[in-house]
Image (cartoon, rainbow, N blue to C red):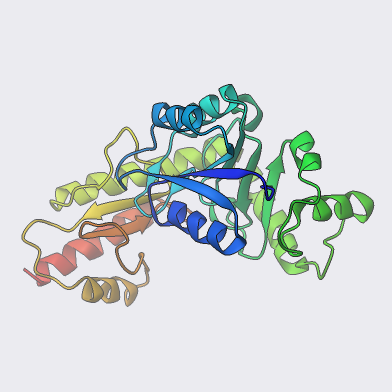
Length: 290
């Protein structure tokens, strides 16, 4: 979506915002990056200031749910200043779309990208983009790769409804089934509520064990929760991970923040009984490793 004479502002505050920087470096895209601390959301006022001071910037991108920390970024406020400054807004909603209500048009998001898995609860295999159609048409001819030529793919689907190359048929069927299951559950509002309840119950049970969340309540998203190690912890995370896995559950296998933390997902086919069971396993492990 970004031409040879255009420039991108990346709002980064985690591993996936930083991966955007790797992508644009490989693609030879002109860019600037605004780094924020992992436990803080990008500030719309700072974005506004950057845009005012650099008229060469044409596009702004940021991650909605940054699973490095579990934080849910304020894309609404950032998108507002991007629109006020006449720039194009790109949102990575890989891990939030389907689990959090996102009024794409109302907020002025031009391109929002997500995946067949994550909150849709399908299987990995393809991504999809909801786009401002006029912006998409303007995008024609700007792609730097054949496989990622979004306009060309859109044009082909308009002709015969297919992928340009081999279609991921089994993934599409799984995606269709996942959408039917989401509808049966009550759509995004019901799924969001289940994820939120998972998150709140998990935080409550961890607090009982003396384990604090990494993100404050205001910015904690319902997708994944990051926790500090317990104070005076003397255990090996690898041992705890293996202990939980041997008993039927898997949590994220390592920290990605600058602090000593671990992460537990709240999404997927996960319910109250799963949260209670994992919490009990962590309690058992800590009691055995004091």
